[in-house]
Length: 312
Image 1 (cartoon, rainbow, N blue to C red):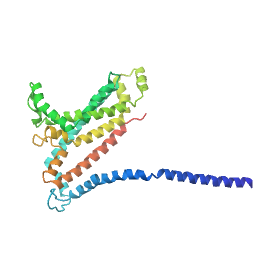
Image 2 (cartoon, rainbow, N blue to C red):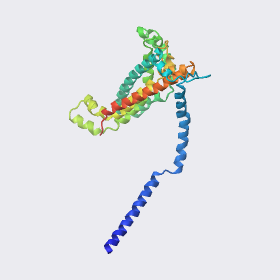
Image 3 (cartoon, one colour):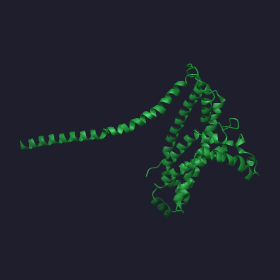
Image 4 (tube, rainbow, N blue to C red):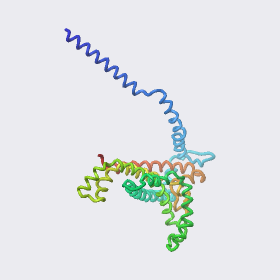
């Protein structure tokens, strides 16, 4: 009898403890009202200045609105016309060519510099700061400096080379390379910091063991360094390609889309046609397509690159 009573009492005590623990977990999950007051203003501001304009833009993409005056619904006509517009297709071709070349150069140069800065060199922190400076400078200001360099200084310095004897920015075939040089110069600053963060996560013992086994520096990079910074490589490649696809400021500063439309990117075309060309609805549809393209490309990159990442 006593044993049964103790068992019942223990059971009731355990039940009460479980209820108190459940209440504690419930109270823990429920945030204090002050947190909501801090979050809601940001949510409302984001919805008012981002989500709502996006939805309005998508709505107008199904109309013939020119940015002023009356408008009518025209369905999917804007979207169908985009695929038949040679200027739009040229802008997409230029944007992808530019983005792919700039992404490859940015990551190759940044990784090489990061490997050098990660080595035991003098004034390592000073050089890290120096390489990060381009990222904090206004791209338009730097762009005009590069414009003067390409149009005035470079022809005088390399006057013996036909390609650079004249202003390369006026060369319809090669003007895009000057934009690549400016964009890569600035983008490397951020990519270097990301790679340095990744290199510092690799245990030094791995390199010591590889050296004892006689692995060459290239074999150490191929078998240890690159696989273990796979996640950082993924981040850099995805961010680089996404950012370069949306290139705008370097083009405005150097060529303004010229000569002709040879360096006109999708974002510049959307800006010109939508805000000053009377094609508000048409270029809004272009912006919707461009958003979908960038999303698909980014997701594809993540899916492919994450397979190569290594855990340790």
